Image (cartoon, rainbow, N blue to C red):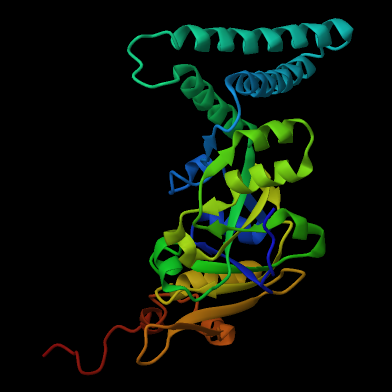
Length: 319
């Protein structure tokens, strides 16, 4: 997998929301399904066929059997079915699913409407790509190298109204954080998939990189790294070090976040983003939390209430 020299901090741009507040207060991260990403080409490789159709059938059959076995085993466990009969039944049913799909592919390939040289290979490649993507049921927590990127603030930080969370990476989590590679090809060699299923670790890493860690070159401004693991919400394996507020972030949001984290047993630093005079660059600087807490929260009728009990005000007496 692609590692690279990891920065001292990695950053998560966020809008301010209930989910963001939960991330901060409960110290959790959410590893998302990559199919929900805004780039439809992200984590969607294309299979390059460099082996014959018989070998493709063998790969597809193995992938289907592995997936079906895992799904049926989980179902059997939930209803407390176990033992040799259950294992044999699962194996037979998994094999049956694979054989049925291959039979359907062979039949559909005889359709005269296909105007391609090898319909069988076309269908095998299509279903192999689908199975390959199903195999990658991992989630992704995307991070960036910089906290001062104007485009990142615009695209992911609620048009500079949000905030940015700065994390350090503990040694225990270092092997789960990977650098994105921009540009190049989305192709995955079928021979690499074949070797991966045969236990070749180098081939598995090559396939993993093609599926999870490649993006189109125009996305390079993100300088993205990815924490990869099981999908869903988890206690954070990263260490929250700082919170940076965008240039348009309101004082009330800053106050709410500062107060929410004030009793945290490991303090975080608070920053705010400022424009650099005469340029398009952004710079972060320490937030004056004392000044913020002195001025907020406020009561709108504070001064009106000071006149309670007076029946008339000098200068406003009636003639």
